[in-house]
Image (cartoon, rainbow, N blue to C red; front, top):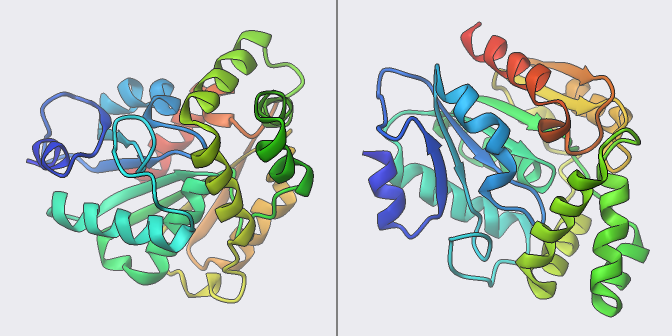
Length: 255
């Protein structure tokens, strides 16, 4: 069974239901830079009512060991190996930010592993402000706090920002810098039109890191795609606006 296989491959994960149902579609969720599977906590149980909802930790994050991956292609190769080894049928692959970049790479290289694609707060290119890259090297804690101010909408309660910063700091300086540097190098603008899978693109209306204008570039290039822009939400749209987010995901998969 997929959950047992994930354990065998030393992949940290959170899932609902606890027993995998092969008759249900499977959503495999990939977190962003400096994240881990728990960023999908507001999705796992609600979506798990109708689907196999599984959020995994990328290498060097959460409960997945190895901390030597420093580019999106390497992450994509790892995810391809895990998906191929652990799931007998194609999955709905859902990625946020850097996770969305990884999912784009897998969709370009191994579309046979994917039933449908959900890209959240991401784009075909993910340039990172030099001040963030430099700050993560020289002033780690304060820079993470500053990033959080860009990651959430103006209406997000301070506790969300504090929890997000704490989670990101726990990943550690080296892994977080590597993630942001990997995002900065990512660019599939000349390839993205080759994705030919049913695709849902979700973006927060107030996303400052991957604004709707960037997300719309995905929708313009991917043939079978549609876009949902969720009001009053920022880059962490799946946390800030989990109910409309989950509804959009459910409708897309069931349709």
